[in-house]
Image (cartoon, rainbow over all chains, first blue to last red; front, top):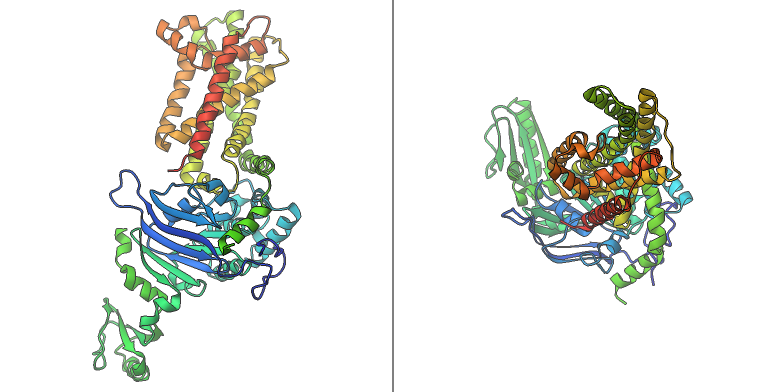
Length: 333
Length: 263
């Protein structure tokens, strides 16, 4: 039988699955037909949501504000009770036994956790020990995490003097300092500077490599694309799509996107039409086979001063995401 | 054995027996809360001193010439006022703030028994209230030149009073919406200072209010503190003990239920 804890947390991340870990791919979290209705609300916050998170993989849950992402998280850790549906964490019925589920789940909440009165290092160490870690192991692992996220200069600074981004990264460290079967990260990149965001994405991948199932809630679709293994797209409480990033973007594989900037855009090459057009910008879907022709056309247009700049890119997950949920609904949500 | 069962079993093996980890976790949580509140300690001491001094001096002004018995009554009432204000007003406001900013919910995702949150918060707020006891008593002694006859159990009684007040405040903050909590706690200060027989004898109150105070915990709390501070002059009855203990148990029970509740 496999043992989850036999990989010492202070060792460098494993390069591949080892026999002592749960087989990557084992189901850790299984949410089935989850419905959550709040009193005094006409629409359910979660409407028949099903999703599965597996050991060693990162499941991205994407959606606009108000899509129901955090409501799902709060039901998994027993802060909310589902109206109907089931949640199993590591084989435990999390609705019937929330306390047992919490033993194997770690959460980075969307709201910042104030740690005034503590330093980042002290906060991470205390939470590691509250999660059941041995003092020496927790101390070592805390140091590693703070280094990995380049938090060294801030590690022992009183929390009153640290920025929102550093506080956010500290909260991430508090979540992963002690191994858990399921790690839930709710918008972990908010407020984090670009350089440390890269380190954070690497640390998230490392968390999965150590054997945890990672549930990553985010609306930072562009950056999440390179980190997630599986995706669930939520909109207004419902699952719109599930699959790997490759599966979700498969239908756009033969298509490129031409972005044009300029005050007065020239007439497009034959057969092409702008998908979106604003005052000084247009996005034009281009069949991949016509890529070279379109680049030549656009370069000529730049030289003649008809457009200011152009870019030709493959359709990204973000494009697919916006296509699914609609670019304009965030304001309304 | 299915893959998920295997995982559950292996995870279950690393979990401590819940009793031991619950106590250890609670002590660590106390450490977390104490460190988080430590920066407010000097401010709390200032507020408590101000409360105690203004109770003693302010009522003195209201009454005019303060006879020695009235002075002792005032001075031994001041510590009760500070203990109750910390518990009924400051505790719910701190809990309310933690709920509003989201840190209360995050703490509740930690693998700890629900009672440990209550235990940690009540320990912190009970301890924070104790300087007020000392400062209130000292303020009275200096102003009216009185001496106390401290009984051995004055400290446990002060802790019981502080705990009861904090538990009631905690239950308020857990059950009521934040805005209502704020209004209720502010109303309570008013009722406590002007309409409770802490700084003046119950005989001064109208009949119906006197009856209300027979079941409310404030007068018994004051009686217990008075007997602990000046045992030669004041005594506490068995029913004082019983009423305070009942309120304490009820408030703790309600708070634990509120902590276990899932929305």
